[in-house]
Image (cartoon, rainbow, N blue to C red; front, side, top):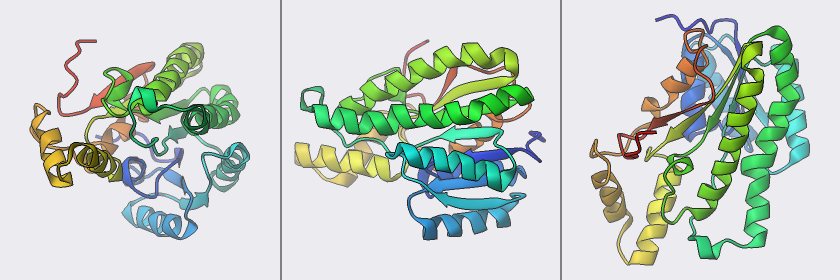
Length: 263
């Protein structure tokens, strides 16, 4: 299937590894031009080279810290300069450390609100007017199944990702008439550093091992295994595609069936 992404220009945040990289890989394979962002320029340069080799029309690495609002402005402007514009914006970032609800502090709430809620909104607001003017745009948030089904030991993530979901659901209704779609891709247990971090925290608190916790996670999933980033990225490309134009304001779960909700 030709997803119609040749000639499209994408900015993918948090793309030096993990889920952001998986989406960047899928966009590159469809011939899109891609700017990848993260904090390590050397890693981004390697990723950009690999994306170009995989089929990206153009690929660039631009460093930015999602915790820094000024960096978000610079990132948006640099992506526009390098690509001539941004048609596809993928909002992705690391998550807060595991904790239970009673462990949330004012300091952690403020710190992670900036990264998970404020910065994504800031960069989207900077790039959205041009998308609306062109009559075509895609905004994807890499979220979490915790947006629908709170995950034990990830209380701070559950709270803040629910906030960005509320923003996206509201905003998507305002821009749909302008040809811009906005969706959340919600991973369940996908084999990334985040999953290992959570398993390590659980092992420390429960007196078990990381291997045992990963096995327990897999046992809780109807598919009986933890997913791979390569099973996640293609959904990003589809939602960014011409064929995905009538999907907006939605949360697509990629979780092996773990969330049992019918909504």
